[in-house]
Length: 118
Length: 109
Image (tube, rainbow over the protein chains, first blue to last red):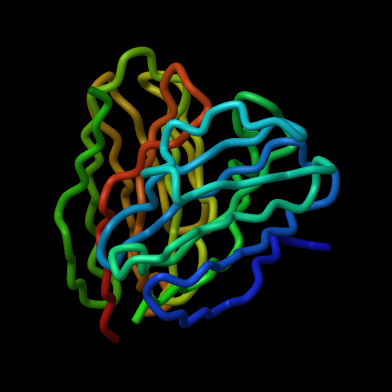
């Protein structure tokens, strides 16, 4: 597609439930990133994939969070036993380059999934 | 610890009233400084990347500059459609971006 696609755009779930958030990067982009943005804050890094492997998962807050990218394109962020503090907008970004951004286009972000845990 | 601080938190301008947004950073080994624009309910939209002190980039009414400790986003004769949150981010010796909390700009006709 023309841009980074994230689904669903909104997700409301009950505390304790499991959720999956999907990211379709721009075709051919090898690098994929997940960020989390709370209200009034800047995006906060969660995890970075280069191809199929997680090159840096240092931003995942705890072991309830997990992400996969099995075929090197679509990625899924999985959150187990959701808590109210997990409520935020989850952003996905992609880049054609590994280890850095395209100097003319930077990292391309999707519109995000707004997760609300009630 | 790598850190990004943006000021002011919010800025209200009259249409045509030029101003500047500030991004101060402390980072070990800057690989790039990024400016993004974010509209409500949308993801960040790329504006500029700056790589070295003294570098400047322009796009329409926006001009970004970089020194060794800070970056400025200058807005010349802003229009209401320039209203958005402007985010600054740095990339250090890793592949992730470290974002500031943004400056919320409102331009009134």
